[in-house]
Structures are given as structure tokens and as C-alpha cells.
Length: 138
Image 1 (tube, rainbow, N blue to C red):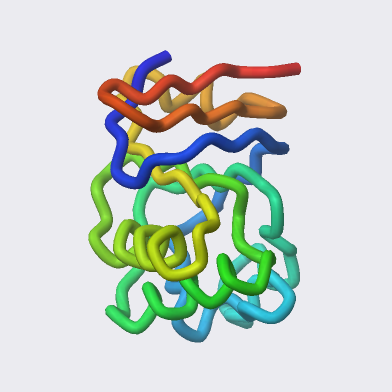
Image 2 (cartoon, rainbow, N blue to C red):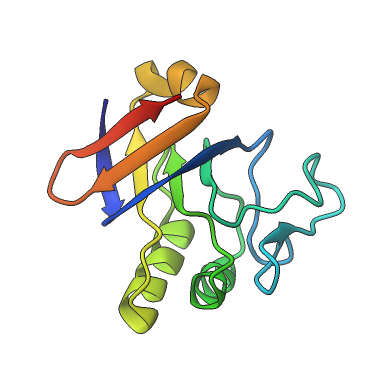
């Protein structure tokens, strides 16, 4: 399926579907990759190396620095697939790419593809020139 590239890169991994939006600022520990927001229903889950599928991010402009730090530390998700554009998530992944030379591709999927993406076990994201490609694995 096709998507819009927000941050280029290629990644593959197990799908992790966010039950609700996450603010990386105060919500993710960049040292471990774990969700630390105690009010988030998936608190304690480690996102490292996973293809995170989430409708949108949740605030705080400082979240981009936390995502960039997780990318630097090697604890970030492998890729992020969203339903809506999110400048904070996009900026964090771009900074991680530019400063540290590490990819965490970010793409925006079509609403029609959302049910298949959230039901997938693994995804491969190839985000370069438009359009990005998302392949569902087993």
C-alpha cells in the first residue's frame, strides 16, 4: 500500500498499535524505549525496534527532542505510521536522521488502509521518493 513520506528511511518490524495517542515528552523513556506515562493504557511497553502505528501524536513540542534522543540511543521505534500529519513526531525523526544519521521513517497512511495496518503482525516501510510503500508481512 502507499503512504505519504514525512521522514524518509527504510525499516521493518513487529507492529505495535497505540491504543491512544502518546506524548513522547513525559511519555517515553529515551534510555529504555518504554512508555512511562502512567496514565497511558500501554504503560511499560517497550517500543524499541517496533513499527508503531498510531493515529496521531499528543502534544508537547518538547516531544520531538525525546524522540530524537531515543533515535540517538538506539531505543526508538523502527518506524512510525500515522493517520494524520504530526509536526512534533516528524521533527523528532528528522532531527535524529540529520544529527545522528539514524533512520526512523515516518509516513502518513490513507484512512482506507488503516484497518489492515492495525491488524498486521509485521510491516516493512520504505519511505523515500513519493509515494512511500508499506508492505504487510506475516
